[in-house]
Image 1 (tube, rainbow, N blue to C red):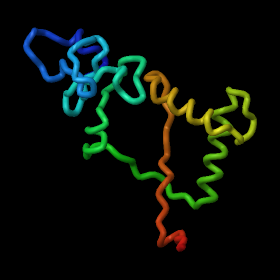
Image 2: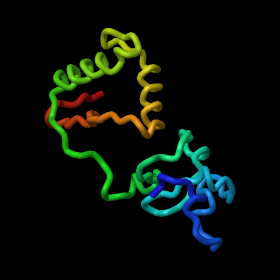
Image 3: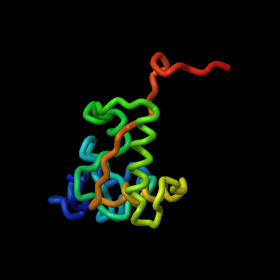
Image 4: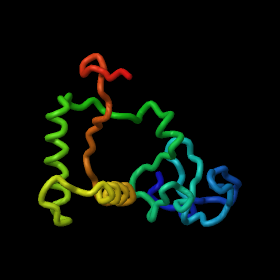
Length: 145
């Protein structure tokens, strides 16, 4: 589990492939090394894109394992029409960003992006995400050029 740095988990001095960062290929800063809970390879927090400021309190998986793993992906959610999904998004933006002084759904795109990365880097706050990017051209039509 990646809730503690590699240096705290080492019980012996035997060579271990997780001692070397997969990005920079250096064996240093073991207290900043994350071990993937899937493949058990090591990554410095500062070598990741974006860099992580803290060691996650939960399991952590590298990008390779997230893409290749069968346990990852999106759960089946509700089906929405375009207008009902837009209404849901508008209501969410309005309620989520009220704390930042926005009283309507007109939140600047850069503010949404900053909030996204803040949530990604913060292991103590959660937000439930509904995936809404797939449209079936057989159901919604398609454009031709």
